[in-house]
Image 1: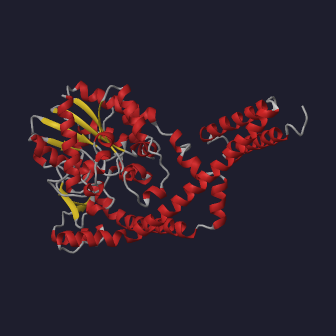
Image 2: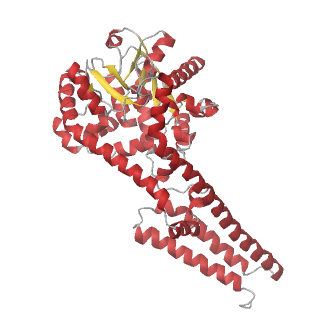
Image 3: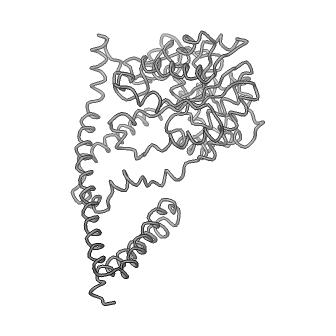
Amino acid sequence: MSYNNNKFSYTLLILSVIFLLFVVYKSEVIFSGEKRDYYYTYYILTFIFILVSFISFFLSNKLKIYFKIICITLFFGIYILEISIHIYKQSYNTKIQISAEKEPDQRKKNYEKLTGKKYDDRSKYEVYFDAKNLNPNTVVAVHPHYFAKHKELSIYGILPLSGISYSPTILCNENGYYSSYESDRYGFNNPDEVWESDEIEFLIIGGSYTNGSCVNRPHDMASVLRTISNKNVITTGMGGSGPLLQFASLREYFNPSVKNVIWIYYDFNLLDLKNELNYPSTILNNYLIDDSYSQNLINKQDFIDKIAVEAIESGIKKNEEGAINQNIQIEKALSALKNEKLSAKLLKILKLHNIRKQLLHISFQENSYPEEEFKLILSKAKKLTEENNANFYLVYLPTHQRYLSNLSSIMYDFNYEFHTKVQKISRELNINFIDLHKDFLEKQSNYRELLPLGIDGHFNINGYKKITEFIYNSIQKIN
């Protein structure tokens, strides 16, 4: 076995070993084993390369020639593909950059062209102060995750899961005006009288979409469902809530007269759950570990109102600073797109950045979602629902980024594996699964018709109406 005949095999073996050592160094030294799951695929690849290198030593001379041709062809083919993806993405990113820079002005132009009215470009707190001059009871929406993630707020001894009761509540502006609602006795976006009903057809659990962002009644999801079903509907949806906060609200506010529970799972709620499990508030985890745990919040609304009003006052400055920081982050992202150095671009190509990211779907985050905890939450929610003789439905609501080209799709590296994971968990738990992604939204010919002024946000009036009608019709088919 001469060296000259096996020169290519030796070269391939040496490169494979170097690759393995590099992977070990990155995995075990740089990240101290914390990202071992992330590098698992690379370990497999390196061992395959080493195995192929060994096998190549025992090939006939003719097969070695073919083997060399195949390896060289694959090498150049992979880099041609990487360069092609890079060029495509550069063009794509440029379009997104231009779109992102124009988006605020475009939103205003769309609104003024559509309505003939002036777009309300005040900040939420400017609106709040102006409205408070007319009605001192006016508040801005205060969401539960605010209390859960700030350790200093644990001094209150409870974790509010709702807003301020019986108050005009300012929500958000995506449609040219600030949406608001008169909150019910528990601070949710419902007409208060629904709590008096002897029979509640639907209880909707979820985050900002179930809270009605950013439309007014009767165009929010719960109101539309009341209209088309001609039945009583309650929502406990609050913006920013993930699965654990949503489960806690189900436990605290479930009414035995409820006939159907609709849980709206938003695309990235598994990421929200990951954060919720690590919030400083120990109260939140009690709902997961103790089936009998309750804060008895329905009898503590006066206290909730008091601490939420204090949170509004103390949070004004924080929110203003947060908005400034968010704008800075967006500007940095846009600047990075514009000013990325040639050396950085070449290094990405050399490291096959796009192929690894887009084709191999390798992501440390994707291997660390709290799927078991989510499954446990859903199983407990289903059990609670069915023990009270109600039906349980899980609705999968996808992010707009699945269907749009915008800044978010560049700033965030998600491969949208959540759908498969959630669907699998639903199947394992025998949960009624309503798929807004595959069965409805993916089939829309003009997705932007569902969005506020045709631009990324929540939904517009038409969007909320259509998805709610689809959910309602799906439930009728299941039953």
